[in-house]
Image 1 (cartoon, rainbow, N blue to C red):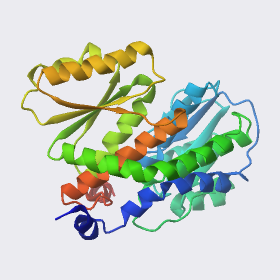
Image 2 (cartoon, one colour; image 1 turned 180 degrees about the vertical axis):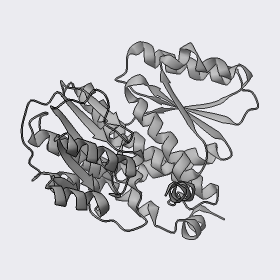
Image 3 (cartoon, rainbow, N blue to C red; image 1 turned 45 degrees about the horizontal axis):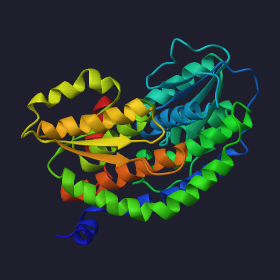
Image 4 (spheres, rainbow, N blue to C red; image 1 turned 60 degrees about the vertical axis):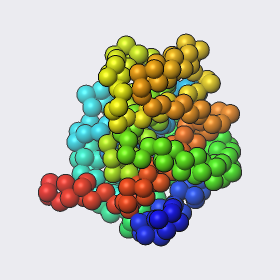
Length: 342
């Protein structure tokens, strides 16, 4: 069965079209957030409360603003039922739940409301929207892309809308021009990334992926593993340079014949010693009989490198799911777990 036949048989939620059109989310994210106004104060930190696909855009935002030197206050990603100990009365709280029903994020919402903290909700609707309306809390309402649409593919909405709210508060400079340039770049490159992802998926078939990246882009490596677990329904693991050269790489001593395939994401904006580490690590993995491939992060700037790499991970995990005879969209084990938690 070829890929066209597999897409017809297994892609029941038309995920391929979602990936092809994901570049459109960035401009929409700006528009839906541009009218959000909050009380301005001298904030001392930003806390983004969310889980899964509603949380990692916060990590991407932190990475982008940190590398651009655009922000002078800490950004904390809160993946829990309660606010972190670092919270103060001057903390800005983002409650991020694409579905609007994430129990951990809703728990943080209630605590932040009691503490009378300034916050904004980000959701497609459901419980979080009702709570925000009742309590008169500003919120960004995402487009409803249908019941089968998964939060892990709403990164463009979350990323651009959160940056827009931060710009409205003058915590950061307005990023709209850069985001819209990114949108045009992705529109051109997505078909090429699909072909690359298809080829990489064939190399990864029946393998366990290990994703390595420079420290500054470790959220990208982590995102790849999440896409493999949720889309391809396989285990995957990640680490970053230079730390992995001080411990994990020694695990390749007995790698020969094992079922691992290492992917190294390499960036030309990384420290020269980190670039050298990536190349030597790949060489040593091959010497130990391991399979490895170095992927250059495409693009001329930080935004392009991050999102082209994320979308390549989308395509690779998508086609690997088809090779595994899996529908890439549903996460049945996660949904079953939520039912048991109820």
